[in-house]
Image (tube, rainbow, N blue to C red; front, side, top):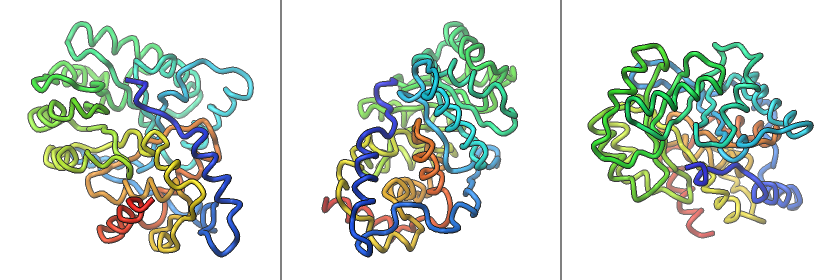
Length: 313
């Protein structure tokens, strides 16, 4: 549901504003490292096809859910344009995200289709009702085909993805997937992952919420599913935890110079994760998020240090 996905609002602004005020020498720089913006964005393969997608994407729940005008619309347009200009491609939305599909359809109308990897989600997994919902999404998005169609928040452990694969065969989508952001539905999601082996799996995962590591990420790996991480900032809880605190100096070892980079790189350090999809309407925050896709990522030892550090907060 859209209420489970949030952008990076006040908590992030407060943390970054506070970080900028900490005395020099006590803090890793609060802006991307010099030259880092010139390095390429990492890309990872979709296991079922080998197609490469950049590791930083954009989520649209909450932030894109209503039609905007003036400066607010200009900011949304700049976020989308900047994302694509930096070589990122993945934009994730859903039929249930208010006006987000229509907003995106407008914002993407002047973009080269080949530069966009567009993902949406529908609520109904049944053949006829699902197709009606999916075709409505295509109209809103102004696309004849989406790259990824996902069943949103799967609840039935016996869910059949045959309708989705039929729509794929008809050329309406290129990949199929499932999502969950509800702990009560994790058992169902795992069962569908193992039985249906979708191309993609989207799950809530952050340094503050690592439940997906126990069974779902291994199940996705076994199924050959590319993993997208929803709620990568844990509904901003990670920013609340580090308010007024400095990024550890050892984060330089994996090129993290800001808290958002620290949190996103943690996720990208997991071998099962294909891409992260933080939402934002702030072009400066987008630039910082994109920087997390550059340079080095933490290895297992460094990720353990990040977990231990966060546990002390």
